[in-house]
Length: 75
Image (spheres, helix red, strand yellow):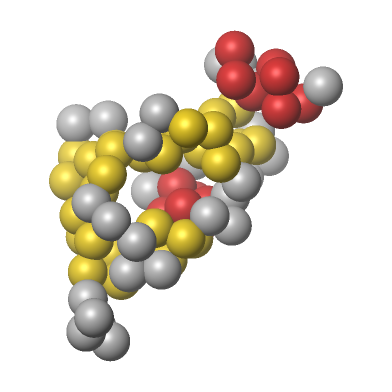
């Protein structure tokens, strides 16, 4: 594995390239997610913590209080 390897992410209709191992929360915050509402993320259809490292090309979605997953995380 290369030290400077990148992973390709899909967020909404955008393609993003970030260094392998970047936490999903960092990416979502850099892409404009509200830090007060961000609870978790969906990566490969799994709900994960914001510290989850991105190591493969994937689709990501923020989980907020307004989502079904967010309500479950908040409880």
